[in-house]
Length: 240
View 1 (tube, rainbow, N blue to C red):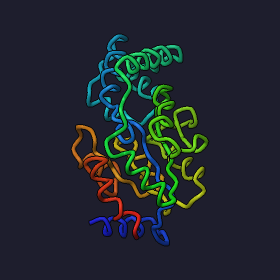
View 2 (cartoon, rainbow, N blue to C red; view 1 turned 30 degrees about the vertical axis):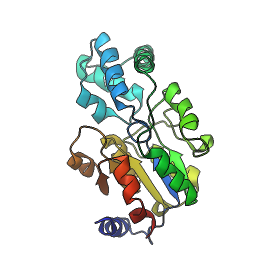
View 3 (cartoon, rainbow, N blue to C red; view 1 turned 60 degrees about the vertical axis):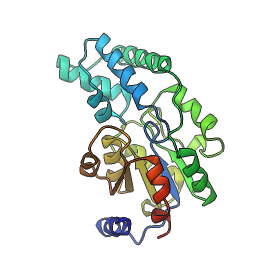
View 4 (tube, rainbow, N blue to C red; view 1 turned 90 degrees about the vertical axis):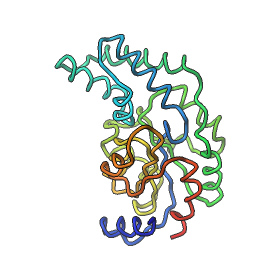
């Protein structure tokens, strides 16, 4: 199944092959078991400003910058864009509720997979739409010696967040490798679309409540159910 997905990916993009040298990781729901905290924080903050927001909305908006999520909700609810002040106020409130929820733990099996990636001599790079200082600071504490800070791509680095391809294209540029030498791993539809639009081999990690078909529709080459599943299947993607 995986070899067929890889072959189709190569053919579709007219690439000379597929030889992974850099692995790009989304953060929330991939490296950290943090999505429930985001669900609670987003819903509470949005509701305080009279903006309807649901659990499904959180997952469908995941990956894009907080400002984009807030602006989209304002347009849908009030028929206008949010002011910069409103964006900052709501995101600050959301960040407060997220920190109040408690420190998220690393996703089970993420440390093991990252150690294997390091052992294989592959680059590991974070590509996230988050601007959450508490999460960004916890990367080095949770995964010491794995990620280089100057190669991370966060909400602070891009003009266009996911689903635009800019975040993943920037990560490829920072990695110094070719697009066919990259694997992107993301759990959110918008993140999957971002990586797929950058013409990268994209693994959809379905750690949320969405149906697997959603991630496939947004461009995932392969969909797996958990980080444990990815760790067990990892050899299929690097031994090609």
